[in-house]
Amino acid sequence: QVQLVESGGGVVQPGRSLRLSCAASGFTFSSYGMHWVRQAPGKGLEWVALIWYDATNKYYSGSVRGRFTISRDNAKNTLYLQMNSLRPEDTAVYYCARGSGWYSSNFDYWGQGTLVTVSS
Amino acid sequence: QSALTQPASVSGSPGQSITISCTGTSSDVGGYEFVSWYQHHPGKAPKLMIYEVRNRPSGVSNRFSGSKSANTASLTISGLQAEDEADYYCCSYTSTNTQVFGTGTKVTVL
Image (cartoon, rainbow over all chains, first blue to last red):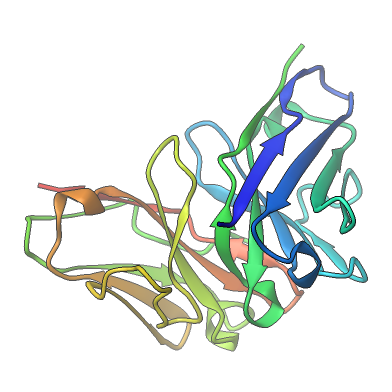
């Protein structure tokens, strides 16, 4: 069955960096676009980034563009999110999700999430 | 990109029907047939309930249905059950090749 397992979360000081990973299994990872979505404490879901199945295109929300980088290693079935210049408002549970359908616009499987806390 | 607008809360008694609206613009909801809906129980992974406006994934109850008119999409839950109590989010593809979620709606079963 499809499994997505995030890791790499933790407590980090403002201005520092962190890299999240999402290990995928149970499907042909290299055939699907992949997303990162986050949820700040007490807030709603916020889309963060999308990477196409072959990594030829990447898209970001305005709140992270220029600071976060999405990437993937199809040989390792792993998705990444490199987060630089972290801010307190980046504190959230980060989910990876598989994209399906046109423009990978449906998030049909999700991981359980990893918590990132940005605090001094 | 501003979040799509949803009512903060909707409630209903068991067996009743409720509808959650999701209002955007012509650059997102109104411009594409790529609206999806997610059910989120706190502490769990969100679950896809409706995709591409009105399609149900395999395994999702037919009590859930979706529709769209102009810049507003809707999710209807019929025959409301206790297990439907959760947060619900709409999401749309946008003209800048990004995605935008709705503000979220807390559904309460009275």
